[in-house]
Image (cartoon, rainbow, N blue to C red; front, side, top):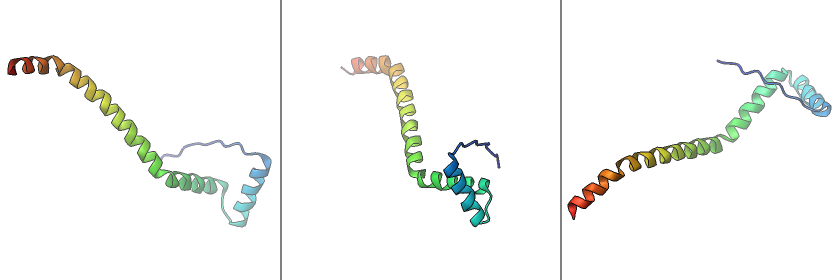
Length: 83
């Protein structure tokens, strides 16, 4: 598993609360932050997936538009032959 270094600056009150929580639960601050990030990502998984799908559809729409424009002349010739 790849580890990502993350530097977070909390105000002194928040820092003290986190340290107190971690001490009370016999937990390392790194484990607390890991859990916090994991819970955040899990709670936003649907929104993240929607954003990825939207971006994918946008990229495909641009690609499809390019492909269609490349064959526009061929389609026009074929339509003229049918008439």
